[in-house]
Amino acid sequence: MKKLPHFLFALLAVLVMSWLSGCVTRLPQAQYDFGPLRALPLDKPAALPPVRIADVDAPTWLSGNQMSFRLAYANEQQVRPYAANQWNMPPAQLFGQRLKARIAEAGGVVLSATGGASQLPLVRIEMDDFIQIFDNETSSWTRIAVRASIFDGRTLLAQKTFVRDWPAPTPDAAGGARALADASDAVIGELMLWLAAQPLKR
Image (cartoon, rainbow, N blue to C red; front, top):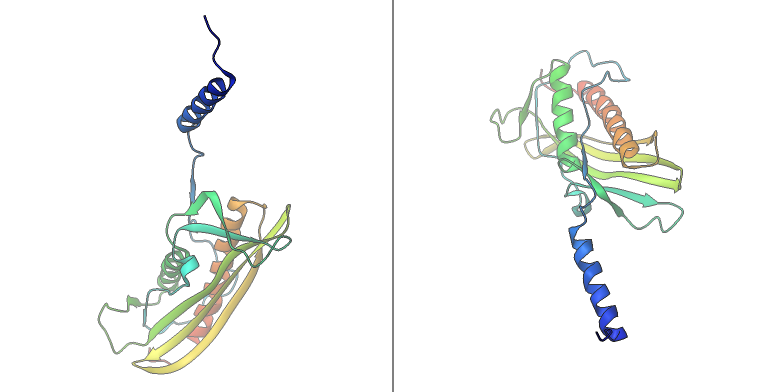
């Protein structure tokens, strides 16, 4: 029996390896949300005015479900996605749902922007940042930045930016998810106190 030429043997080996790699099961993908409601670190507002809340706006890089991070020690201008981890919905939607749940928990009345009652003030929120940042391979923290605006029709009544940095308990996707959830709750607590302090109809 003749031996295969070296180049045919090499080609056959490549084909077999390609086939095997196609059969390998992909890494399981973990999905995260903000978890159950936890006690806010800030006092609940005494009273919240009834408001309408629009869908949270976010830049294009935050429009999907991917979990993003930056390496401060290796080109911090590059936003990188986790390969096998993601949010179960875009961060802006997670934040909007959490805000509505917190307001309802505090006894407030919240409606969607298109849910009628057009005489109620409209709260618009823009998410500017929502990311995990690694200072080195073993240490990371998270940042969330949102800008809230209150409108009466087309008239801007008030506006404020909220920024929170929060340490991640572990330098991985799970730690980033936990820290971003905690930072979001802290921002929402501050936003609710600000909202309660506005001279709006109650």
